[in-house]
Image 1 (cartoon, one colour):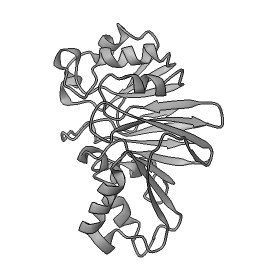
Image 2: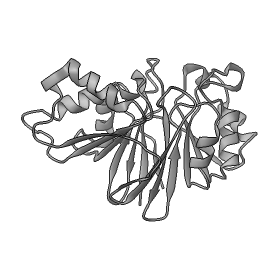
Image 3: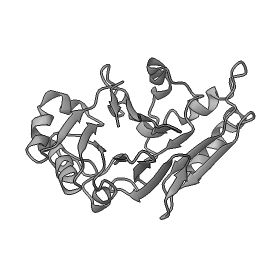
Image 4: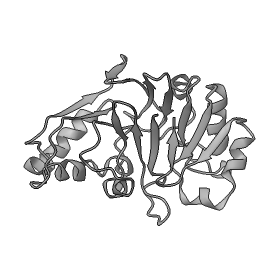
Length: 251
């Protein structure tokens, strides 16, 4: 059985309850980290995962709360006592290679792989086939280069993940009839911020995409002060789950 683990359900705002954004997908043949906000690498240890485990890292965009632990991941992979050996693939949207090369100039040999192969790629209009997964990506309404992902597994299950986005047709298309839709839900309905979703907008996307189950995540502090579940339920009648750090969801 495949499983999704919420490593971090929060944002860049420090919180004792919620870590910065990161998800971990475990399928029969693959282990995929989706975003790696600050502290993700340490938080992974609480569910028995290390820098050795992921085969693939998918990045939705390059804001610090989503990519900050990429450097620690690459630095840890050079740990002389237990260096990473298996290859690692990192994939992001348009501009991700440029971002990575700039990061490489700053850190130089400290993050250059010496015991494993590292491949940095950008998404295209064609699907990506990786082991037992088919991965599609589309631009999101957030930051230039932001993307959302749809991941289909050989067991017939499918998930979609928005990353940060406002309401847009592309996330509806990616999420069509998925078993699990993971949407950011940054602010309550009465505190809408451009480039981000509210519970009602997330519910609208889940309804229009005919998703079977909805997981809300990426909560700024105001979301923990109101009943965002009720706000979402007014629009989406399917199952809704509010993310918490270390939550595990079978797929």
